[in-house]
Length: 148
Image (cartoon, rainbow, N blue to C red; front, side, top):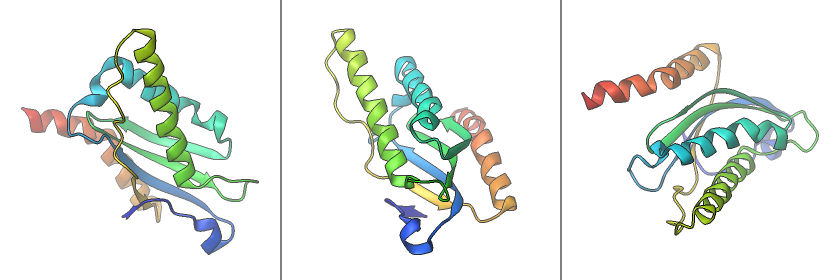
């Protein structure tokens, strides 16, 4: 696991890789359960390939205070983005949309809610990929079981 931006292009030349990524809210509260914010998180996730055509999205789940997803980066594409630039753009787009929502509804914006950085694991093979996909798919069920 690594915290921060990985610039593999500089280390490895050209590459195509899958990443298991977790991004968190700064507070351990169910912030992402706010319906309007959850909708923004989902909309901006769906729109990422328009901004970064060389990426491929895989599994994705929004939990109360964090998100897990798998994303594939095609380093063979011209001007391929880094993982950090994609995550930075996503966080920024969500934040701007959330600010606009607050302004449109004449509410005070509560301030930045993202924890700095992100956690990522490079997916090393098909067994690990399936294990991570299973983890992402079943993560909400584990939370429900934990709460009961």
